[in-house]
Image (cartoon, rainbow, N blue to C red):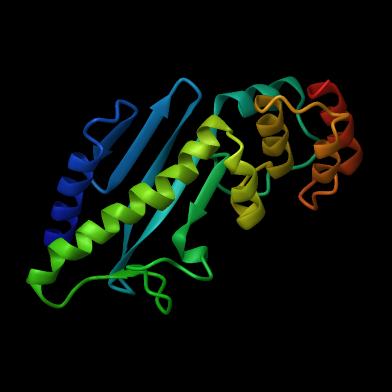
Length: 201
C-alpha cells in the first residue's frame, strides 16, 4: 500500500505542477526555485506511525544578503541549516487528510481508496503548504502572518519581517512599522531596532 500511495501521489503532483516553471517533482519531494531563493516540501514516511507527514524548508536570497551585511549578535531560532523549516507534525489543528490524532496522513486499508486520498493530499500540498514556501522564498507580505502562526519555524523571524516590510515599501517612521517593533520575536531588541532604522530608511 505504501508503494502504491507514493507512486500515485508523485504522478498527481507532476500533473498538478506541470505548467509551473519554478516547480519540479522528485521522488517524495516538491522542489521550488526562482531568482529569490529555493525551497522543498519533503514527503516523509513514519514507520512507527505508518503514515506520512511533510517537512518544508526554504532559503531566501534577500535575507541571506541582510545577514551577511549585518550579522545579528544572536543565534538562529531553528536548529536546521535552512532559514525556514516547518514540519506538519507541529500543527495543533492539522487539515485533513492529516489526522488530528496521529498528525499523519494514514494509509488507506483498501487499494480502491488510494486515488481519492492522493487527490486530497495533492490539493493540500498545492493549496496550503507550497504557499508557505513561496511566501518565504519571496518574502512577500503574507509571510508576516505565517511567522505569527509558526514563529519557531523561522531562523530570524524579526529580520524576515523587516525584509517583507521593505519589499512592501514600508519605512521605519511609518505608523504601521510601530506595530512590528512590538513583536516578541526579537533576538536582541536594541540591535533589531537600530537595524530597522537603517534598513527601512
